[in-house]
Length: 316
Image (cartoon, rainbow, N blue to C red; front, side, top):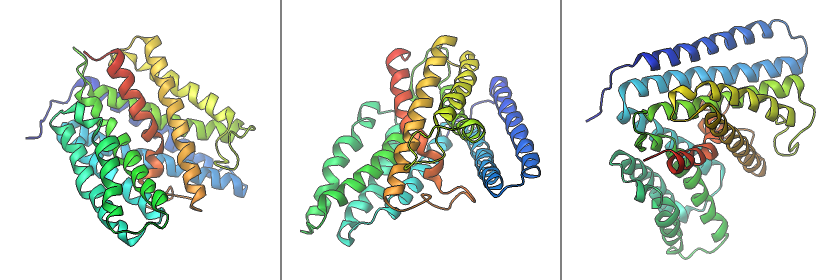
């Protein structure tokens, strides 16, 4: 049965703070939209508004999941993984004979990964996809005897499953950790808040002060100034949230910095994948700002790094 935990005052205060930030951000974007006069300025504000709207949707959905409990949280992340995998494989051409491997990825390994989370089988959780899916998927494709671009075709399916399912599932896997008196749900709040806030702040600071492109041919909007300035602001927020975690303020700063860096490189790598495929966005699920994977690209790298750091240094 789905557990129905009581709504804690701490969680209410946290969401009140996040909603306050979103209201301020929305009002700022509203007034900016009426003050800019150039086409590039309007484009920047539209992009910022799209990110803020996506934030509203994510916060409201995650708030519902947190209130209802573990069951709905796993269902939510399972659906996120499913749609991220769908977007990834929709943009990466496959052969008709790969349908068995693709069906196994969607209808075997996605539900299995989240079922393992439900029953708290952490040992199998960490090897199901990297070992068993890695070995089974090419077997399902090779049985058809089609060798054209076999390595590339197989690697696309494996890559999609690793990113969209294995990596993303490390976010709700935080709920399985034994942290003593600290509730692990607050670590999930910490992760999602820092990684998404970092994304918005890096974009905003980069647009205001950015001059030095990190990788102009991969993602023109990512700048050194945005990474440093926006990243530091996100680390400050993470440091300020130390009291809901098992971390000291210094440890919270280090964890937030790891999330920021991993999230930045996750977004950069997936931008490179998109560019190689000639696509601007992964999908169109979120109006004005692409698909589910466009919002979760940072999480794909940040979630497993954060999970294993916490598990190694703080879990019992």
